[in-house]
Image (tube, rainbow, N blue to C red; front, top):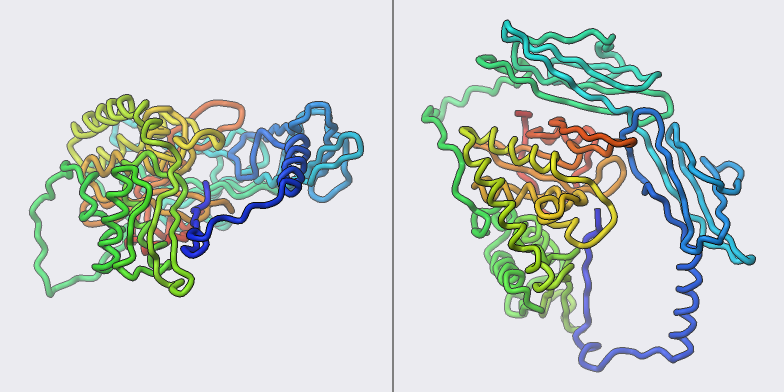
Length: 470
């Protein structure tokens, strides 16, 4: 996930002009940059956590193909690199390139492996379901629970015997292998006419009568109505004015907007901008943040704000028609579903089944058109696409940021009925080393306590309360 970017400009410096370095300084910097670029080391797998069956085959290369590479693992002795390094447990690899006595900086890659566990389900003629948990590797122990509790190594050990369920059940499982990260999966299996045993009973509230009228399925788009969105409604009245101006700036792909009359502080602007960004997936030009200017004598007052665009309006115009046509088809099909659950499930599965996770490439991979128009994305693209489709169907939906498995990450929260849930389409579309694809539902409509099993929330705007899995 790309980092949020903020650029602060000093008003007085802008008025006086920019500092110009000498020619010698410029040429020296260029030569240093060239040398670093020529010997820079890259890997086909970035640091991260990978779901694998047995091993992660990693290759390294230098920009200058004639340079020699040297590597070590877990702080050991350096060896000359001659080909693929097979990672078979959690491993830290250090690599550097060398040519003609010039040595590149040492680059460190951390690879954490997680056993891949997949649910398989069979519908039985008596209305029950048979569930099996498959892990295609040796040395893995799988533990599970059927009551919604978090499994540990003291929970039931799965012994390759199918589990038969006769009522709606949330199965949680962990896969444990020495020297590896613990793999975790969860899935809710529906049995018609039954309720989930593990849903906590809520205390009786006698002070207010319950309205038993069935809820009308969501359908009217809120995509272009920011007044209905979560982030906007977490702001005070002055902050909402700034949000509205930033919204209009993005809508017109403008250069800057004045906020001087609002007396907005830099800290307030940070909250306002990310509330706007994580509310609005329809602006494909958005980049990785914003900039602002202030006067030296009033550092706590923002004069103007600007958006750090990732693409120009002309660039997004080339794909806009294709993006909208595909999005409209998805929305049309989802609208035919008879319940809100089925609508959200449809768009979740469409994104997972039609998107390839790709950490490298152009700006579109971080926006809604990544999955919808190009079929590839980073976690931001997965999240923005889900938010675009959900809001188009009338659901309140936001992006949430934090960390997952040690790295920056983005996912969604969506409101269905009266309750908010977390949805992580990226994690439900795991990278399968060695090929293949799978659509999971482990992170579909889950609570904050469940998502925190392997996610850390670090959102610039307060998130909604989410107390139960669906």
